[in-house]
Length: 323
Ligand code: ATP
Ligand code: MG
Image (cartoon, rainbow, N blue to C red):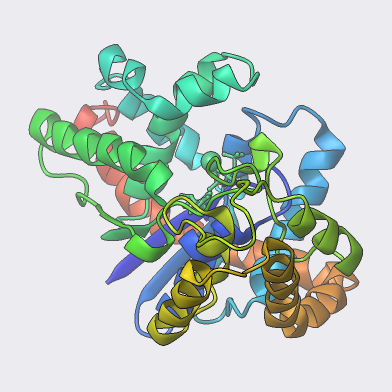
């Protein structure tokens, strides 16, 4: 099965990215054809500082490699190194109803948060559909926030196939219920652009500070703590198996639990979980040449895979006028 997903180098990668997408991608590489990429064209919708975009792209590449993404097993590249995707975006744009894009929540959420209401941000889902269809992906692992965008991609694949003849694979979303929406320190969806993230590779001091600043309710210590919608419970649970979660639940409903103690434990769990990867991450950060060569090699592989679908699409819409 061909599995594909991308992540924006729009900021430091966080627990939501890790559990919603990155960790699942790394696991998939064992038994599937994995396509994983850093969507820097998409990041241009919210990052307007060229040096920052460069740095964040490099950092995201190091992050993935450190987490165990194997560039020999998977195709791992930077989106804009295969600019053909912008051509497919144009082909798809002409069968994309404006109403379809107007219904997308993400555009409304982001503009409400102060991200400029640009044409790029509005047509973000079309570029994302092109990303998916260009590589013939069967399955796309994402967090719940991307469910609607996946529906747009499916819609466009079906519409294109109906209009011009069989061209694209219709992709399936792959959302893991336990990790569908990781909450940020303010309780909203953890997002790079919301400034509410817990970074996976933060240094110890800032990690501690972040965890300590998580919003909690004011339930007195000697009363049972709520589970539903409790940010601390949800974050801790990410790292626990079913038995661990049941035990944690027991602790929350037993009077006497101090949120401060739980915060300290969460800090330690996150620090220890990512510690071995962090070492590798720091090593890779100093090996720019290796990271760059790896991404370039990945782009060559991605470009070959893309040519199949792009040629077919060009032909089916009639751009091959000499035939
Ligand atoms: P931005 O705020 O710039 O949109 P982001 O933090 O939402 O950044 P993306 O690059 O948009 O991250 O998303 C990368 C992947 O991570 C997607 O598959 C997305 O569904 C997933 N993801 C992002 N945030 C979360 C979250 N809080 N919980 C689960 N999955 C998430
Ligand atoms: Mg996002």
